[in-house]
Image 1 (spheres, rainbow, N blue to C red):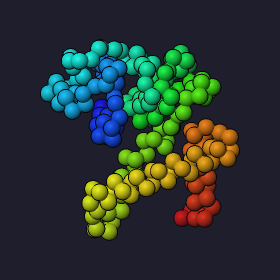
Image 2: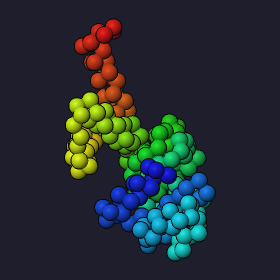
Image 3: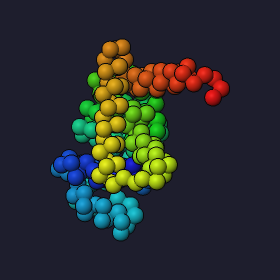
Image 4: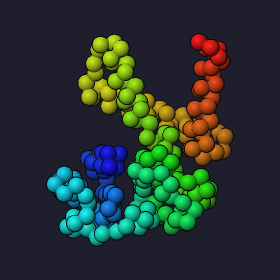
Length: 197
């Protein structure tokens, strides 16, 4: 998919070793790492990851519990459930999809010490980039891709730092802290503007 494909490409470019990916037909796994340029070429030519040489076929359910450092559920909601949360082997879950972790699974991941970057924070980059596009259109002044990436990086890392600091100060997880910060900002905007602009 779009989120997972871009994430895989960017992580590979950053020097990460990707061991598993999946799409609507299933997944592939190679503990030694997937050849990402070759895999991306395979997907362009064949549309799906199935049949990629040098990897074992796995189900999407197996991908969620495959041994890895970072798990990025990037397509569907409700993928991490109370039934499979005990078997997630990643140290970090970064939610690229909307709602990939069921609320009942959150406490299980927390009890196991799995660090979850919630969807509200992890996949806000697309909305932020759309905001940048709107700002540029209003001003009729357009930025380079490097400028957009620089501004996006600054905003996203700043947002992560704020949410993490609030989570630490209040003793809550990142999901709760992200919601707390979001509600606080909306309430403050309403207070300043009044109910009827």
